[in-house]
Image (cartoon, rainbow, N blue to C red):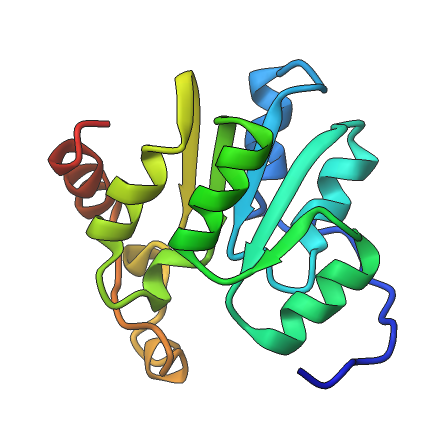
Length: 165
């Protein structure tokens, strides 16, 4: 894997960022958190700035992984579900897992959510943030070519229900 130069990342405080949900939940800052599909680490940076101390990321893209790993050494693993399972074996089950704009890019989001929810602690929380197709312009939608799925609140709830969440 070719090393990328250090990139300073900015936190993600966009309107769709899961950090707003975490603020609303008023969680203990020491809970164990997994950002599944952490990209370059903007969600991890938001967690750090909010005072969370026990957070990790998983990223499948090699360059995005390198950027996030450079900014959060030892907290990010390269891969997907299997590497998430290994991470949970090393650090323990997660109290919170979030996927921020990841599920719409997955071939089988239902299966991934089912597998990843197995890494939650007994009272764990999973947050899946996706674009709401009902709020998107029909002209805008074709621009999201890499989106394999479109969601509504009802279709996302159906996935949750089907995996027992």
